[in-house]
Length: 115
Image (cartoon, rainbow, N blue to C red; front, side, top):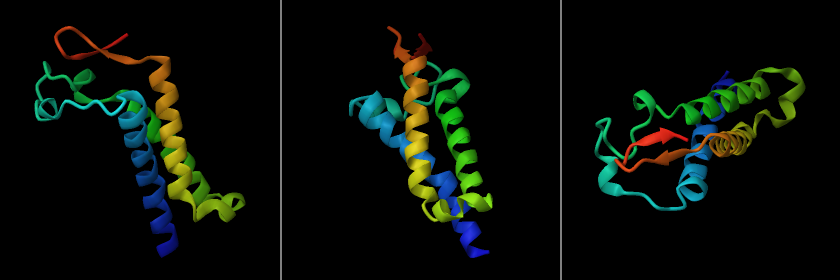
């Protein structure tokens, strides 16, 4: 049972880590406005649609579901122990592809709007 528990945790945490890495290094190119991180108003620079980054959520759900399939489908048992790594790669890849497809850009007011 503990293997299933760890595999499920890895299937969810791995994609999250991949999304964070891709967002910081590839999407934002290591340019973060630290003061704006603490502005949680709709006028803030990092405010997304209704306060949620739907691109990241879509990538997280897709990669997490695939990771769960790796954990519970018997055919994928040889790679089930690598759920964190596969989730990290899948989550980052999905996020990067979705962000390239419909990038969020900074408007003149500093808020994010879909391009």
